[in-house]
Image (cartoon, rainbow, N blue to C red; front, side):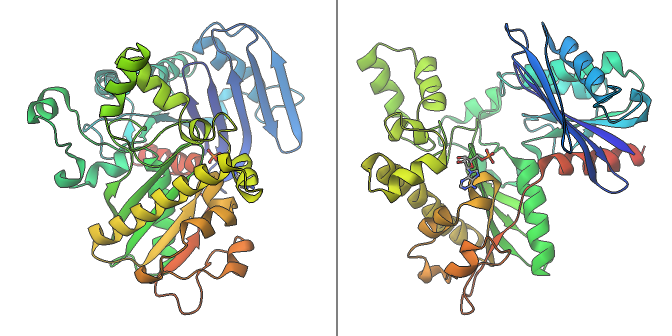
Length: 396
Ligand code: AMP
């Protein structure tokens, strides 16, 4: 079965078409600047590239452009849309309503809508993407795959904030966690490779432009670093990660900014970008500056690595043990320098890196005498979404 994966943002729509009989990627594309002047679509099929600049006033128009690209006589991959058996939609926030992926029907659409206050930027876009797709493919089954679902197994002690309880009961304010599809995919793969599915304590470090970590015991998430929103936790490309909430009040007062504007600054102008004084939000630039002794890179890389190291220690304590530390996503999979900096001085936890293996981005990069395994496992969120979609529509 061919499965179309849709990841709709507020002004973008990413998609992949996967042949699930062999789990082969058939096409991958992106609509950008939806609702803005200069909108375009690009699609890659192996070496073949399809590019068009065309007006995309809304997601429905974007979806029509996707259909045109996929079925293009010259650079397309399918004759018509009837060869698509199902669609999997990435949805940011499932709140506490979804512990797993779900077949999209009326109640599921309503629940995604009900969770808009928790994901005000993404859930409306995800919903618009689903509706636009349904208009063109009304009879094709669709599945919603939630970024939050994997973390729903967190115990209460890990997800409650220390604020008046009524904010939780009335407004559902708690920690949810994100990147769940990646954490689930990578932890399952690591546990399978370790050969100990029944008894395993692993820490997943998803380090990309957005970064998060999770503590996974026997395949179930017991803690994760992102919270109510993706702002909590690691130092990220443009997000501050953990900080004293009093900072919001102080900056608001000193700079005459509304609280929501300060939060926007913490999301969009902080992290690598902010701490490096505008040098870059990209790890490669930060590390290049670090390597040259430029303090903008040195301080940023140090804070980044130190915070992740502290989380590894705290998750080992939370799980009362540690079998493996697993690196994934853009930085985690590719940057031996980041992994080396993060795992400095962790012998106490039983972690020792083999720098040669680390340099070569091997699957196992721990030294022979390391008690804890250190792994590099590529993530593939789209494939995870496609697998869920196939499983759910096959079980109908
Ligand atoms: P992602 O959000 O998973 O695409 O990851 C983006 C981050 O990965 C950026 O900070 C990049 O600098 C970093 N990254 C991607 N490729 C490499 C690489 N080959 N070496 C080091 N960092 C990389």
